Amino acid sequence: MVLDKLRAPRGLRRKAVTLLTGLTFVIVAATGIAAFAAGFDIQVVGLHTLMGFVFILLVAFHLVNNRKPLLRYVRSKTLWGSLAVTAVMAIVVWRQPPAVKMLLSLSGNLGPAQERFQMSEDHMVFQYSPADDYKLALTVKTGPTYQLENPPQIAIWLENQGAYHIKTLLAPDKDKEGMLPYWAFKKKGWEQAKRKAEENNAKVDGVSSATPNGSFNPADYILPADPENSMPYKLLIEINQPGDAHGSLEDQPSLVYAVEIDNSLPRTFQVLDLAGYPQREQIDGQESWPLYYVNEEFGSALDLIDSALLTIERTPAGSVGTIQETGN
Image (cartoon, rainbow, N blue to C red; front, side, top):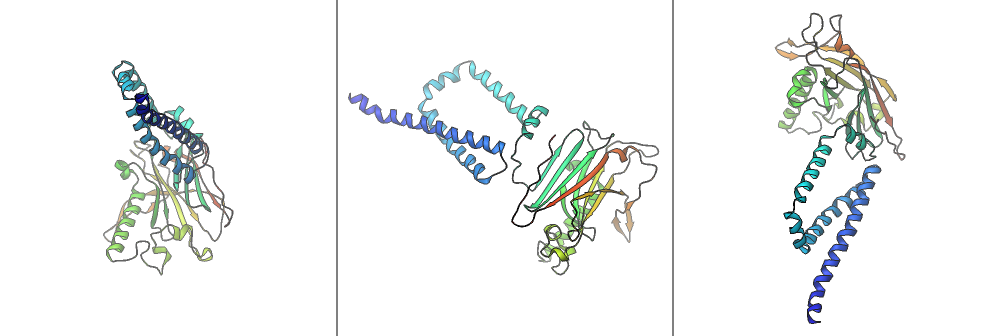
């Protein structure tokens, strides 16, 4: 009897840890399913994350309480089979083959990020939401020469009315930025101007408060404080397929597509037009990349993009809406 009384607290501890572990797992599982099925909710994700840390702590206590049987499992051959299965599952999910991507696309949780990019066999969708009441969705339908196995390099960015870069929405691969010289030149100029402004103790969000066209903050153009005095801005795409020889061109230059957005004349749907191809020049000792009209020397490069449509959803204050991401 005395021994039973001494063991009672230990037995109670085991039961408590086991029950707490099980109940915590229920909460983690339920919030995980909710986070996958529903739209992003900071309370659901926060509860899932924090209870996950509690679950880890309880599992540690559970391992201590059951160390003897667990040590027997570790010494068995089943351990290696379990490790192999777990490793294979982790690698498959990490690499995201088409089946896994299809499963993930069923999720309603797009996360809190302002920017999202999705690629399918015949189109790509890029979304940018600087605010809940202002959402941009760019849908680019790929053309017949677009190669999924060897995709072209693409950059998407915003420019102000003075043709100065204000924000990159989608950047190319770091080691292939040279394939998109127009975007790289614009981005380089923006970085230099911002550095100079900071060195001169100017405000980080603007070169000059007197001229909206000198601001570094894209919200000054997309979400102006005074819509009636807003300044137009542009959305641009530069695309280049590596090794796309055509006619006399050993490698066709990149092509630039653009559309102007004017908040004072709101339009829901706007089609991007071919703006031209960039060519390097020296003007008064300064590097420049003007755009030239596309001529008959171009061929397959013109068929990389079939069409590019920009959709803008502006929601009146007090009734926030959403744009659902186009599925695969």
